[in-house]
Structures are given as C-alpha cells and as structure tokens.
Length: 112
Length: 113
Image (cartoon, rainbow over all chains, first blue to last red; front, side):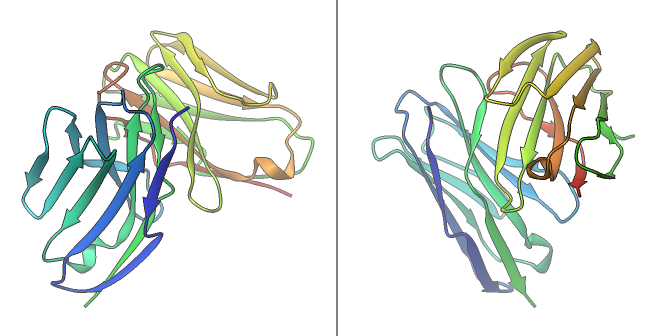
C-alpha cells in the first residue's frame, strides 16, 4: 500500500515567518495530493490540493508544490499568523482504492 | 448549519461494553467514511460507504460494525470494547470517491477504562 512520510513532526515559527512542511510518497501512480488543517477539538479541513498535472498551486498565503519525479510535495505558508497554529496533514489518494492515506501530521505553532 | 455531525462528542465507558456513535451529513454526499485518530494524531481509514454500500473495510476487528440506514447516515457500533479502542473517531463524507474533498465531523473521543 501507499506509504506517506511527513516532516517535520513539530514546527515553531515567529509570526510573519514562513513555514514549510514536506511529504514523500511511494506509489508513483498516485495523482491527487490534498492538505488538511486540524484545529484543536475539530475535524480536519481541506485547505489546498494539487493534482499531478500541475507543479504548483497558490491560494493567498498558502501554496503547494509537487515534484512527481522525486515523489514529494510541500506545503508553504507565508506571513504566518497565530491562527495558523494547528496540526497539518498531507494526504495521497491511493490509486487502487480511491481512499486517502494521511501523513502523520505536523504541529505548527506560530508565536506572536 | 452543521455539515457533518456526529454524536456523542465524548464517550467514556468500561471494557467489555458495547457502544454506538452516530453520524449524519446534510451535504447530499454519496460517500461516507469512518476514520480513527490515535493518541499520536495518526489518521487511519476504517470504513468507506458509497450509496449505503460498503466499499472499503480496512483491517479493523469485526467488533466494529458500521451501518448505513440511508445515504445521509453512517453509524458505528463497537462490541466488547477494549482499552486499545480509546481514540478519536471521525466521520467524514465526500461527494464521490476519489478526488472529492473530505468533510469531517468534529470527532467522538472514546475513552475505555
């Protein structure tokens, strides 16, 4: 099955800095890569996704890049704010079963 | 309006008991899921239903039995609860299988003592 590695497990930044979270995957046939944000006491929420025919996608302060050859993709958050503090999960759509395999999550802490 | 709602939010029970978690979605989605999140925050799929039909059943003990009375509901029944079942259980839905975004409920924290 799909193996998804996510790094770092925790990330502390100052408000205004950038944050980068990286994920690698194993199945070269995978073609859909979403990112989810989980705030305390809530369920994960989709914040951005990318498909394999695109190398980069931006939505305001959030961007995702994909390198299909190297089988890795990254989440970039610029001008971080305290409300960005949460656990972020990358995920990969399993080509066989149409289900998502999640990374183990990154706890992002943005200090004012 | 809550899109995916699950009850109860907290569930504390003793080993050996049987309990149920209910989930309802008002998004008109065709596919529903149960995910388990352990103490290290790892999210793992348990079941996936599409139009009330079981599609995915990961390696989950048969003490766990999902039931989908209709497209908008997917309940989870757990028999003979064990300490290792303690976790947060999330219900989710999506418009279709595959590349459709998942909409999660806010979770049910199950504690087995």
